[in-house]
Length: 285
Ligand code: AMP
Image (cartoon, rainbow, N blue to C red; front, side, top):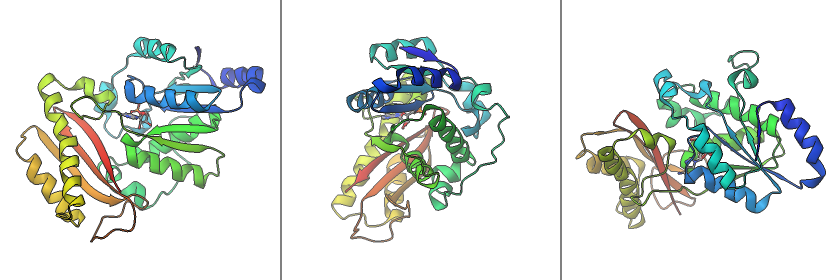
């Protein structure tokens, strides 16, 4: 695997090998890699002749500076995992490379309601910083196919809007959520949970599944009811601080007022456990 730290170096490499590569697949990450990340690389390798992973802990998407400081960094282990997966290139830029002119954001895109609700409400500025770095990474790596996880449902939606708004010739594939045996969605942040919190964290997915099952049985027919059911279930756990639980339309993220629904929907949750913020979601079709 080639480890490339600058955009210029990456371009030089592409020029050298361009004819060999029909398509480039790309999975951007913030490192502390787990099976969820690796599933994106595996999918890329199935489809593309060149697979690129990036690791960059992007300062501008952390609305909480403490979260940024505490973000796990395990670069040696990450490199070993990527080598094992036969990832072709690891793009590993530093902050200066990605933000040569400082971290001001002059090219903000208005993503409308999709970026204002849920994560947008609880993490002000997060999606501006995320879109800023994803655009920079896409322009640097120039992939044909981009792989992102359903785990960050709203993020993938906003990146799809970014691609449309900037008219980038890139296909986004959203890959399924990889989970621990307990059902807990894999996340780099899980490494910051102690053994007890890890057990309790599995309640988030259990709650998503329980509410989904009630929706399927038509016992729940609106976002307000879904939220109330989740709150009731989770209030037993003192260490879970629920930020939001919501039932939304997949295409617009608008709340569900009534059923039957003519489109796909999604249940989304964000909660704090042991000082760590976790998110998860399940699709309902
Ligand atoms: P991150 O390093 O958290 O920024 O995530 C990098 C990419 O991996 C994003 O597209 C995430 O949605 C995806 N990802 C993170 N966790 C999982 C998971 N458990 N299953 C599938 N994809 C994931």
